[in-house]
Amino acid sequence: MILDDRKLKILQAIIRNYLETGEPVGSRTISKYTDLNLSSATIRNEMADLEELGYIIQPHTSAGRIPSDKGYRLYVDTMLEEKTHEVENMKELLLDKADKIDLLLKQIAKLLATNTNYATLVSKPQYRSKKVKFIQLTEVDPEQLLAVIVIEGNIVKNKMISITEPLDKEIMLKLNIVMNTFLQGLDLTEINLNIIQKMKEQAGSYSNIVSSILDAIAQAIGEEDEVEIYTSGATNILKYPELSDMEKVTELISTFEEKKPLTELINTKLTEGDLDNRGIQVYIGSETSVEAMKDCSVVTATYEIEEGVYGKIGIIGPKRMDYDKVVGTLHTLMVQLDDIFKKKT
Image (cartoon, rainbow, N blue to C red):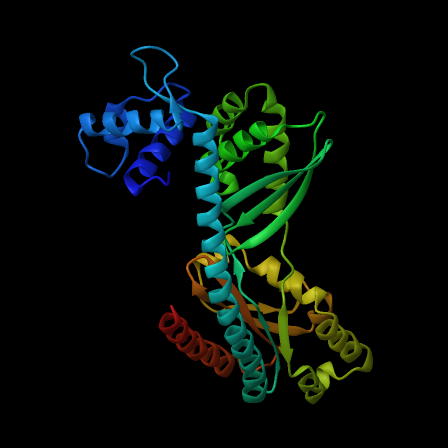
């Protein structure tokens, strides 16, 4: 029998409440917990049906209900199906959007280089916040688990976790439920001791595995994603005598070709304070972190595609660059980009 929406919502509410408290769940609790606006009597009838169907059980007379293995299985299967659809839909939207953004950013780099006669760089957007969207644990062999961690922005991280003994299907099911119930929507900084303690209580004798999974999640979230940078106008550097020394030119051109030092520049300047102050930033000579640019000035601005998604635009030239023109150009560009991205969303 396929459960109707009302029964399914009541079952989900029972499971979520039981996972949080560890106590049998009664109809009065569910009447406050769901958005169904049903009376306790109606919920009792629905719970009786769910019990008859084998999705919940009553451990003691006059006590509330707790999920059965069958109830847990439906809960997880429904959750997995919803997340799969959500990720697939998002993937299609993101691929379409990413193609358009890539083309736009490349055009911006070329346009700025032409208009300013300096070298330019534009970084692809990065996610400032990395919240957990979904976790799927799968046993690879008796000694290893694969943790697939989906982070905000549909960034997928895979981590292998060592285990000391094989885990049966019901334990794997329980661990998946515990992970997703407590961690969905949380950033690393929001996973506190109270949450960890509750997760370990739910995991029981497998609490050590919870610690290993949390370590894997922390590592996945903390990893720096590779920053893609588009550059243009590197040869414009040759137009300025103070930068035309063969050794300096070679070093600067190499920096633009390799892009690794530019990545360090982006990561260094894309800090908390810089994101909160999205104005124009000017770095003169040794103020920049890139050794090859110690005789240059770097002017940057932070663009925002949507909340929490940022990238950098930079213009590199001699210390005697036309700051008025460069700053004015970037100000105008920021206004235009804000308008473009607002229309896209």
